Each structure stands twice: as C-alpha cells, then as structure tokens.
Image (cartoon, rainbow, N blue to C red):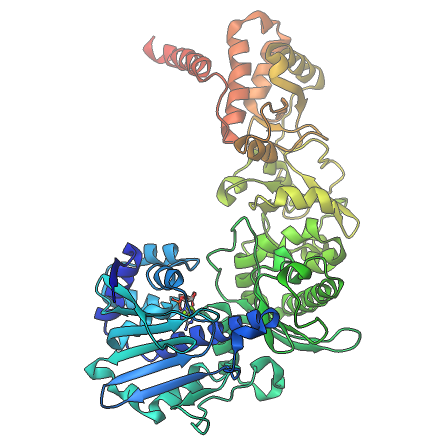
Length: 628
Ligand code: ADP
Ligand code: MG
C-alpha cells in the first residue's frame, strides 16, 4: 500500500509551531474544536441524507464518541458523519481556508506568550489537536464511498495520507497524548470539559463504545430550551460554536415566533467586528434549521445584508425538510421569516439605543456595525423608521455620538434643516472652512465619514420633517438662523456691496469656466474662500469618491464663495474698485484663491506648475520691501 507525503501550507506550519511549543494554559479547548467539527460533520450528513437516504445506510443514529485507550495512551474523537474523501482530507487538514486566518496570522507577534492568548481568542480548529498530542491520526471514510483513508502527522511540517481498509463511515481523530496530557483519558475530566464547552451540541457525545455508553452532554438543541433555563455561559459557548467566534455576544436574541408561521430564533450580535464584515459578497452567517435538522448556512433570503454581522440559528417548523438550497430562493415562507427576524432584531436594538444606561455599550456597537446598518436605510424602506432611531453621528457639538432625535431637539431658532458634511477623515472635516459660519452661529453639523453616507442621505431626504442639507453645497441658508448665546461675534467690517460686486464680477471673468459661479459667502468667518457644489449638483465628497472609482471622469465646476469680512477679500475688492482689474497681479491672486480652496478640499491642482509660479512671484513681492 502506498503512502503519500505532503507539506503543510506555510500558514499551517506557523500555526502548528505556536500551538505545539507554547505553554497554553487552556489546552482543553482542543476537545471543543474536535467535537465542533464532528457535530458539523453529522449535521452535513443529515442534510445530505434528506435527498439521498442511502447515505445513512444501517448506521442511522448520528452521534459522537470519545474513546480512551489507557494502554496505548490514545484518545479518539469519533463521529459517524459525512467523512472526507482523499482530496478533501488533503485540502481540509493541510491548509487553512477559514475567513480571517490571514488577518489573524498578521497579528501574530512572534512572542509565544502573546500569541498564545491570541490563539485563545481565535481558535485554531483541528490543529489544536497538537496541543495535547505529539502524533495525530485521522481515519475517515466519506458517506457513499467505499474507500477509507488514513491521515498521519506529528505536526512538524508534513503529513502523510494512505488508503486504509475497514474504516467505518465518518471520521475518527486519534490523539497520541503527550505525557502531560494523559488526564484526557479520564471520563471525569472529559465530562467536565464537554459540559463546559459542548453541552449545547444537539447530538449525544458518549464515553466509550456500545449502546449503553454514558452520554456526557445534555444533547438537546440549545435553542429549543426555555430561555429562563439557559445560563449566560451556555449562550456564550453556543455562540462560539455556531458563530466560529471567540468574543462574547454583545446582544443575545432568543425568541419563538408562533402564529401563522412558527420558528425559533437564537441570534447573537458579536462584541467585536468579524473579519469579513466588508466582504463584497455581504454573506450573512445565520444557520437555517428545519425542525432541528441543519439545512444550510447559505440561505440567501434569511437575513438582510445589512444585518450580516448576526450569528446564530433560525429553526423553522413550517419549511419542508427536503427543501433544497435552490428552492429556498424566493420562498415566500422564508421571506416571512426574514421579515420577522428583521423586526425582532431591530426592535431589540432600538431598546438598547433608547436606554440611557446602555449609551456607552451602544456606542461600541455602533462603532463596529453602524456603517453596515446604514445600508438598510436605502435598501429597506419598510424598516427605515426603526433604523433611523439607531443611527448615531459624530458632530461639531460634542465628542459624544448624537442621534437624529437629539440633533433635532437642540436645533437653533429659525433652523429648518439638519446640516451635515461628508468626507474621509473626521479631523479634516472638523477643520473644513465651510463649517465656520455654522460654528459662529452655534449651529450643529453632523460629520459623516462612511462612504455609505453619500447614498442613504439623498434616499432618506429628511427626518422629522427637516431636510438633510450638505454644508458643502449651495442652498444651505443660514440667514434665518438666530445666533445662539454660544455664537461668536461677527467681524465688524465687511466690504461695501458695490465693491464686492465689482470683485465678484472680476473673479468670474478671470476664472471663467474653472468655476461655476462666484458668490459672497455666509459660511465663512476665518477663511477667505471656500468651494461648494451648486445646489442640485453632485456634492463634492461624492464627486471625489466617484472619480476614485472611475464612475465619473469630469467633475462639474464648483461655486467659489468669498468671505466679505476677510481682510484679503476687502483689499482685493478695494483694488478692483480702484480700477486695478487690468493688473496681472490681481489675476494671479484670483487663481491663487481658487487653488487654495482646492487644496483645503484635499484635491489635486489641475495646474500645479502655474500655482507654484504665481505663488513664487507673490513671495518675491512680499520679500521686496525687506530687501529694499
Ligand atoms: P473549521 O471547522 O473552522 O472549518 P477546522 O480546522 O476545525 O476549521 O477544520 C477544517 C476542516 O476540516 C473543516 O471545515 C471540515 O471540512 C474538515 N473536518 C474537520 N474535522 C472533520 C470531521 N470530523 N468530519 C468531516 N470533516 C472534518
Ligand atoms: Mg472546526
């Protein structure tokens, strides 16, 4: 019989190195990982057998067994689940395909102690077997196939695979225990570990062979038990199992829907951001069961994309057991379940959002998942009102997050709009010249930095009868707003109207098509100029985003706003009215003003050479009196 040797994928070798040579204090989690795999394997077989009953053959009682052999010093974790073909064996136990693994490995520091605690949070699945074993054998035969296989490795860079006769269906992981891990031969010790981590596993986990071998776990699906009977630890362990997660649930939602459609939901909101949150496929991770039988974790219509951070299970009483994954698409029952799940989860989130005692925890949730939830504001009209209760913002008023209701409650007298500014970076936004006039009048402006903000705001349009208005766009009229007590003083001098008119006309004539218009500004107090998009034009940040993604080649020219209270503008207006409009120096100033406004927006200049020539000439003039 031929034996083939293979090298582990480099990432696996690194992982194994850390696992095997570290003084990991919680070695016992290897059992959680192996039992979890065995339970998944049984779930998958049960699902496959719905359409191919022959796969179960005469071995119909799915389950997991722990077999201890004191003489050989081995512990075996055996299941009669789906098993693995040769190729699957090589692929699954030689590489890591799990999402987030790359990110995990990047975070490894090389310092064994620190890395070990990271492993504790991340979990290393099958490879954790090498924490307690110096040699691992896997005997497996895939359901429906005749040939069995033996996988062997000492966890040092290589493994071998060979044909094996007489392997029962499913998988047996045989651990040749290290000397310091012999405790895992004892029933009592194993029972304690199983109850701690795997009590919720819906299959019996037995100690020993035979029908009367004692069962170590409760073996009932956790979600079928009444809420009052389930401890926080049990929920947490189940969350780890079902969500492949290692943090704590931020929120647990466990309910039973009764009436026209019946189902049980046990869903978790994670405490930390899952690695694949912004994967473009936007896949959710909620498992669908039908009457306790696992169907799929890819039921597309089960959870809306903007709730894809949820983990857990939905168990339907009404869907047919032999429902195929394809049949699930566009299934009206599933659509109803989705509506119910959405309503329930959003309802619980609103409760958290509106509880003042939870403000800090809610802020943490929002930092993680706010950008994802906002997708619902333009995708899901039906739940928009609930979502609007959840949205939180940074703003110019304070460092704390603000809700729309809070914003509206502190609007100034005469203010009829909700003002916002969008950009990439919160600190850059805070320094935007367009905010100056709002700050001077004490008007709060929301600071938005998620790309998705550009899309939901125009969709939603208004809140509580107040329109959303961008401060980087025309039509944000501040003249009706009464300055509050916190307002700053207005500059005493401004340019007389006719002189300003002359300057504006000169700027328009000089800048020509580079600007859409030149206007006197109400938004500026300190800066001389700023750019805004004309009312009805694409807002400036969105235009930049679209350009970055090649969705837009030409941006429309912007409106240049000038600050009539700024001394530079006053002097330029003076020069213009004294007839200096033919002076090339004044034209240079006009272009420098525009370029400066572009720079403040973080844009690249269309003609940097001209900019630097004009600036140098101006600097030279500035030096002239010194040299004389
Ligand atoms: P994960 O469970 O997160 O996918 P693991 O390292 O625990 O990662 O397992 C890797 C893969 O090996 C599993 O996804 C599965 O395909 C396969 N596998 C592991 N144990 C078993 C088993 N007992 N039966 C069938 N397949 C298994
Ligand atoms: Mg696993």
